[in-house]
Image 1 (cartoon, rainbow, N blue to C red):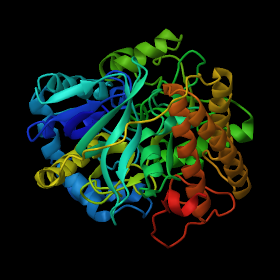
Image 2: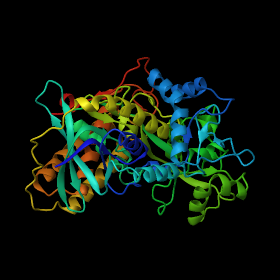
Image 3: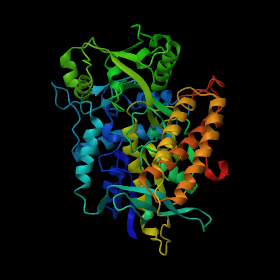
Image 4: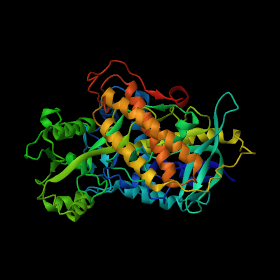
Length: 527
């Protein structure tokens, strides 16, 4: 048994930020499924939204966020997010993050513009902002004596005390991937920061680790899960069989790139007044419509109006990657397709990132705190990770001294000696991701969702038997999690009888006037 004050599960911007802060107040065990750098944060290209320019204002950033959220944002949380941004950015800079400055005036940041923003307010580090932030946070983690990092460890399930009137979390079963055994981690406070759920879909910009582990564990533990129908599909992933999950940043369209069909026709003016700078849900749906109408597999992103030197300064990483696949952005249009990108729903939390289970917090993309509503505004995600980590730390700090470490806990029991059939697991993995892409993707219908749910329940039953009858493995744990996440997404989509933000149903094309969250709870929705 490993005892700690704080158990942090996940090593993206939210988990690392929380761990650094919490280490000043107690011992921290930081769990990460691969190595510390394996997260969606490290792949984030665009930047962090923050009001820094005198021509900009909090009110405008708030309004842009609310508009993108399509009326379903929690306005108090949006205001808190936006007004907290300068302090969180200052913290990053003090830790060592170097945001790109203007050439001629070193005191001013070079601010990017992205879809849905009315002003330039995106702080960035070239086109590898997430990489720079992740690098600096990890450097600071390694300096902290109070933090023990457990790489190649994956959470299996949360430890929940169900004997009380209220459910309490007191740790988690953690699978040591190298030793192939499950260990017991007991903590006063548990923080879920496991990132997104993109791997539940066939095409995604997310890294392989994004299998919705935190959402699935919280669901099985009985926590409320909110708004999971709102999956953001990034409009522009590079279409190339060799380019796995490579994103062409929103910032490329912010700098003047134009979407064109394979006939060379610009088409976004048919779908939105902002054309190529429309919010992501509009752009992704427009591309999906164009592809369905034409039968083509991709559209083009054209930024050939810019000179070669522009790309070397503003988008060196994207430019180099495209060159690797024979595409010169200054001469060639880039083939792109939409892909599952960001989950605007998640574990339902309050202002301080507390879930409906006592002593269990959720931060970053794993959580749903209301700031994104029905659609996330570009570059608000890294900011949300920073702000939610701070709020969770402040609240958990108040609670810590009054929480006792639980004793006499049963060890994880799995006496099976056999290995699961890899062919069966591979088949189930492939089937669920294709099923979600075709039936619960960018455009949905009741019939598609109903068929999807029936098949998901069958697959879930099969995997539950595997979990009982075979040794634990990372492949089995991830399959179990994406099936739970798929079930939640489909049930959430079936519950929302309207089209709003990222949820578009052909059966309910109109938006409702009701401002409600979709809440899914295992006890209420599953036999």
